[in-house]
Length: 279
Ligand SMILES: [Zn+2]
Image 1 (cartoon, rainbow, N blue to C red):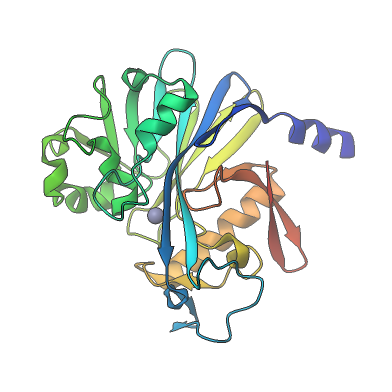
Image 2: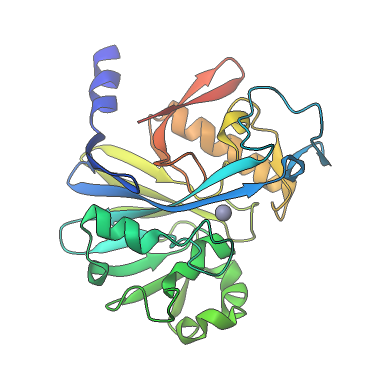
């Protein structure tokens, strides 16, 4: 049994890396983590039993100049024919510490013209605005499909900066399949339609889980801790617990939008909680 687990673990391997990207093999696919940048947030965004943390924040939580630093990552799935991109970063729509996705693609040697499908885990700023470059041009000139959680289609269509994509947006729901390797998994709570993308190939799986965890130094150990911007705090907590258990018990790698770049690794159980082991 142990040897089976070992063999599985070895199957997602890093094959190339740079400052803004890391590429891994997963069966017949290549999965690339792309670093859009980071955003600093006050510690009070973390919630326990509905209240913000203050001085009692556990020492294990990594701070940069007194703030929580969240990495902002997107993930490319390459099957050799084209690329499905999960999330797109913030472009110039939020803080200037983000918007490096085009540089990350360049560094990874990925031609933006090979991105044919873009899927959003949800419609918050740091995930959707990378469709449009800072200079106003389309980031992905040969984009053919744009998939948005059905529950959030109206949120997406309210973003004036992305107006030329409003008509193209196609709703999806949990249980849908994209192409032959990607299944959509319900992860509602952080936002009304927040979703994960389970990517499978060669008997291996990685769950690209969006904003399931915002602060990795705390929320694996204490998955009950929520985030101010979780639209439904209780549902977000339930989804996180379910997805952590799934990743740990079914040996499914995870890839997180706000896990420290590159944000890919495995989840293991640790007593009643969990630990993240980066890959
Ligand atoms: Zn986010």
